[in-house]
Length: 153
Image 1: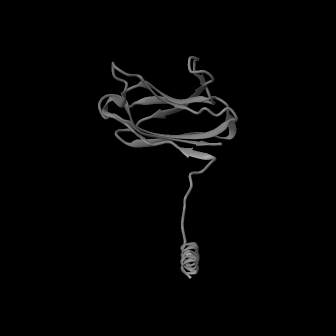
Image 2 (image 1 turned 135 degrees about the vertical axis):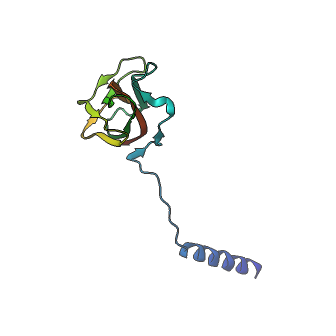
Image 3 (image 1 turned 90 degrees about the horizontal axis):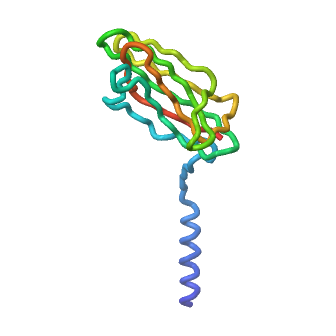
């Protein structure tokens, strides 16, 4: 009799538990969003200290990935308007040199207005295990406000 009561109790517990709706949101196996980078005071370009800024991402996928990078730039109000080029780059080995992927985007600041630049490779996969976005200041002063990077298999 005790075994029957135990069996019925377990059966009812399983049935009740099976009826409870559970929502699980698994991470996508095909897309990765990296944590957003928020610019620091030291991310000002066009000073004596820095004329370039880069953010490197090790991919470790050799079957090719799509990517999208979104970088927000701001013009510093002192002096001439900032002018930057934003260039995605890749390399095969940790000790290798970066090569350009696609063409660079040139940005010219206006006052202290933030501008978001999106660079992506959504039609052609890239096969570099290391990717980076290089921002080069060519005139005036500018600042990195934020940076986002998405990888899709």
